[in-house]
Figure 1 (spheres, rainbow, N blue to C red):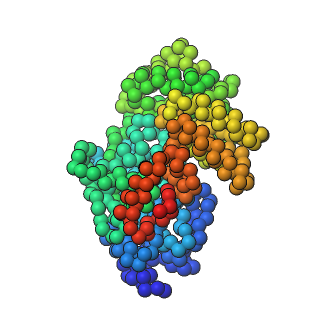
Figure 2: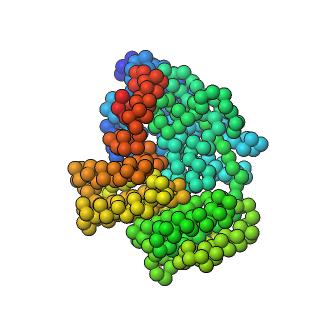
Figure 3: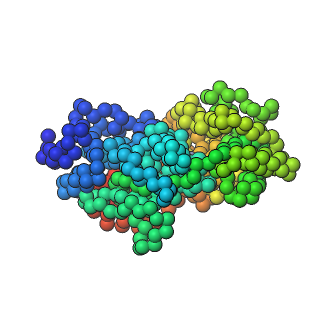
Length: 461
Ligand code: ZN
């Protein structure tokens, strides 16, 4: 073993050090079943001090590292590359404090999202970040990718839910604080350097999260609609009815809905199929009053010709049944595999034209393909999954270019919530200018002059 490895072992102790044959596949496999090379060393620090010691040693030796959370990322950022040491934050998983007066929770970066949601719930609060991978993703990973998910329309992205953040820089220095303040204009907001930068600028170790009151009611409906213009008018109608308080507005194209029914074995609640399905949800404080207001908003939408049909959940079991169709997206993807998947943002005003041109162009290139679309339409975020060209690397590239060019032409983003990582790196320039990317490189070089943190993720230096 090298001298560096000896010193790293000393820094983290035997429980934090896995080397050679003992390194299990979980440290080089991600949720997309992609495989990196097996790393020769996995470090599992148990404190910020240990993370700092690791980085000090690796910085001095020029040893590259890749931080890991729950390995549920979809862009390959957490997979080790050749020669990289894995830095797993899994032991930094303490719930350090729930401050019920400030409505905050302070946790380690390796804490699983669902644990945070449950612990907040037990104290009468809600931590509203929510996504399909909740049972295995960790808050450090959620923040390093600035995760989105289902309730962004009301509570914002992961970055909007963080008050304080502690991180370790490439040279081992510890920065940031576990501030509980909502208002704090004391110079540069350093938190935001580490949120969404996919582990390239520093290692997030602990965070103070913003909690919300736990909603007393959850009203949910699934509506059938004829065309996308109706979808947008219905969204505005519901936002007006609830003063902007809609907590989810998820739209499923018929193509997706049919596949979701197949994989869940659920029957459609409607007698006839509809071109679009909108799942809309309002969280509130008064179950009876909220249900009444929700049903009356739906009735007026129906009278105004905004929706053609609707089913309202009458119980928590029915709420979960309706959500199940929307939550089935990873099963749908697996069932159609091999597929190409896209996570794009498009201004809502351009969304329908984008989807129409997109499916027509893909059909022209690959007749007989299967393309399914759903999305967080309230946030302008669409997920597109297609079998077109997926089995062949050259054809995949052609479909990628088609989708990303069209996204760029519509002033959209090639990554709404998944990040860039390795997978989307070739397409970054469709969404960011040369000057933007040059400034990112300047920041990277300033914070990590030896390039040891997640090298090659987002862009190459
Ligand atoms: Zn999503």
